[in-house]
Image: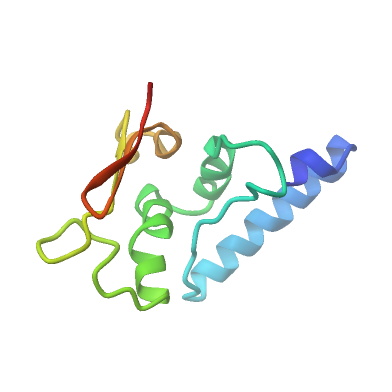
Length: 122
């Protein structure tokens, strides 16, 4: 969001550094990190930069958990957040391994909700 509303790059860089530091402190103190976007506020749909900024202070697995198990646990969605028998068939298929490059989390190939494909990259 800071890259779209703040015109001064120095201010933007300061805000990003402060926010990344707050994310680290929050996570280090046991806060559940939940991924969210500013879609609706901005028309930028590419989440690559957000994942990369998070990865400055979180591991690949922690960033992945912010999209999967953390929200499921936080919102008490007992049948979501894992690929496991008995869980809802909500899946996102990526074009690359997010553990080798966290930016691959933004490379969505297919989205499946309740066992039905709701998005497939052309």
